[in-house]
Image 1: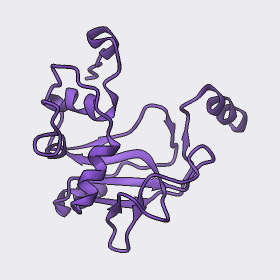
Image 2 (image 1 turned 120 degrees about the horizontal axis):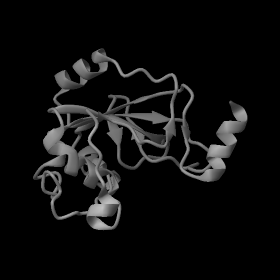
Image 3 (image 1 turned 90 degrees about the vertical axis):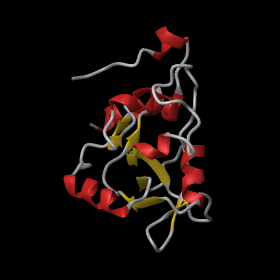
Length: 163
């Protein structure tokens, strides 16, 4: 079953990633995948083994990082030798938008948006991830397969020319 969040109709604006996840939280399992709808990642495999490893870790999130594309040359997050994501690092990678999350990350005390997000709070994901990273609660790994953030008409056109 697919359930659509009609944020524009309900609130007049998008809830951003964490706000949208909080809105969907009552429908989600304790551990769930998130992937932005505007990334092209044809070879990424969503495996049960990844879910099992994440569940066993006890951490709040596990994210996949990619080499920095031209539109994000400085990256978003670092990766420590221990496999934990680093909020701010000299060598940073770009967040692919692919992640495994524990619902606890989107509840108090980590996230102040109420489950179901009835008030329509727009909440970005990066600040929430950074707080969890600073507490040592986010692991990460590098994905080096094909990945494109198709976030603009120009990048979509560039991707279509390659295909």
